[in-house]
Each structure stands twice: as C-alpha cells, then as structure tokens.
Image (cartoon, rainbow, N blue to C red):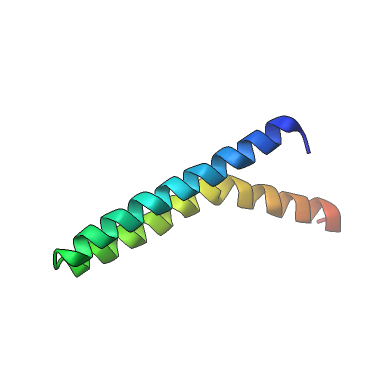
Length: 71
C-alpha cells in the first residue's frame, strides 16, 4: 500500500469519526429537548452522509473483487 493511500484512508476515517461525533451531539441535544423526531432524522442523515463518503471505497472493493475473479 502506498503512503498516499494510507494518508487517504486515515483522512476518510477521521471524516467518518467527525460526522459521527457531530451527529451524536446533535442527537443528544435534540433528544433531551423533546424533539425525538428531529433527532431521528439527524441520525438517518448521518448514516446517509457516511454512506456517501464510502461510495468510492465500495466501488474500489467491487472492482478488486471483479479483477480477482475475472468478471
């Protein structure tokens, strides 16, 4: 694995951790103030944001699997 790839992987991990931290804080604030519905929407939005961050990595995974098995 190249050094640049390692740096990109660490950056992706930190982005995911940042999104998780922000979502959890926003969820707790909304939940404690009695806005459970908005808190649920925040958590769903957080999951969607993380999945969008991972789309390129999932594409690389499928490309690697296709090349290994010769599809």
